[in-house]
Image (cartoon, rainbow, N blue to C red; front, side, top):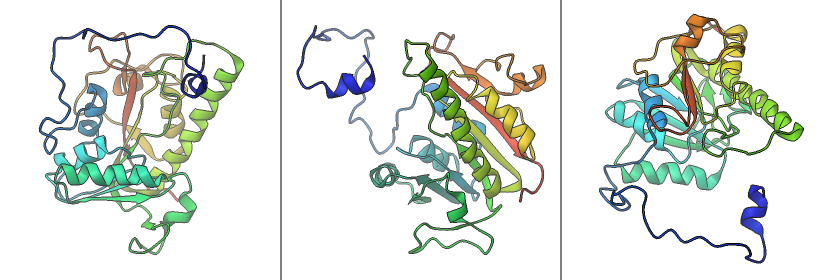
Length: 272
């Protein structure tokens, strides 16, 4: 049964399951200290520390909804500087704004924007955000950028199949993500930091795209400030040294996390 069938079946049938006992003896945090707490899984929290945004910097989150990483970055910056958040859905942008307001953060500016359509919003002449649709941003202007693009989500929603359609879908996802990487490199200052992350365990979307980025753009991998994940997989074109610099979280790993991946790059030259 696929996702569409699961959620759109007209008539309920089969066996219903009632959860009458919690696996872990822990109280719910729903509604507790909502102005101070935003729940994240461990790898998602690690990502913002890998980006390591500093107070006063100009930072971009390219695929930001619902705003967990966005708000975390703003908190790490002491709510000083500016965090721009993109998402292409109206309600998703509202989610980012609501979460920023709930946590009392003032430096987050959320925009409805399709990050892959970079020719529409990257400007050689400077930034125009007030009243612009879409807003425009100056080329090579951001200090740090997080690219956490749509992915196959195999780290959190395993698909119990191995078929040609799945294989094709995974390849297409990896190629699609490269549009976000290209846009990010165009917007990032020389010397700036780019972090690429996904919630999948598919090497093509992870190590494969790291190899693509290193070959295609003026980027080099850097050692992350925090390292809790394992090394990258072999066979995707990364050297042993490069595999040591990326972080891969496996669902069966020692930290009991969803599958996840992140890599930190430094931009070492202009890209036009």
